[in-house]
Image 1 (cartoon, rainbow, N blue to C red):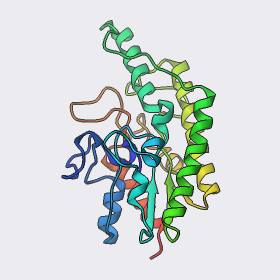
Image 2: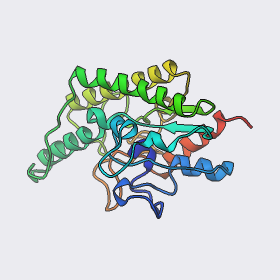
Image 3: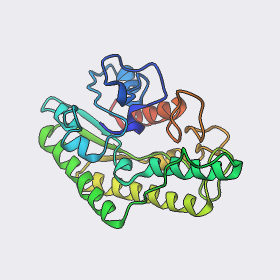
Image 4: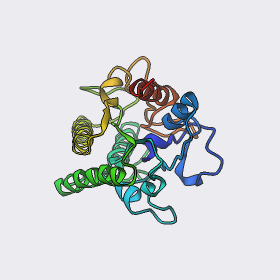
Length: 244
């Protein structure tokens, strides 16, 4: 389950029967893990999904959690960034900074809409509800919350992250809050946590071997999202968490 960081937009080929707007890659971390382990996978990840899409459904898409039942043995989830505008704001802020630096004009850029504290409190509760819902629907399943990987360096920026220093710091704080809230939800629901932020610390956008796309990107790629190396790294880490 999850949003774009679980779905894999910009990483073709895509799952043939998936909704086009979901950007559900046949190489996302769940797909890779299922192929390696010989698991029967139900992949309901969708780019743009919020916790509401997991719990209640989204337009024509049913609630992701309804894909789980008593026979489910493993559930992975990366969710929450869209609830607080994490990547959307990173893209908007980068667009504005790059446009100003190059004199190309800001007309095509959106203005970041920073989440207030209330949004983070709502997200905290929703993540815990997801854990509870999984436990109720699949009491015998192993539940693993997967953090958002690191994108920005601990300090500063680079050419692939054209951000104002204040915006970069604000986005680091959002990433930290997401990490903390994901960890809290895992703890509250007795789930495992894959610390993807720590795992990817030396593979951010500005590193020599990035697991993330920067900004801007070539056609078909998703800015500030995992590349195939990043997806594979998470799949390998998940595999290491499962019983042999």
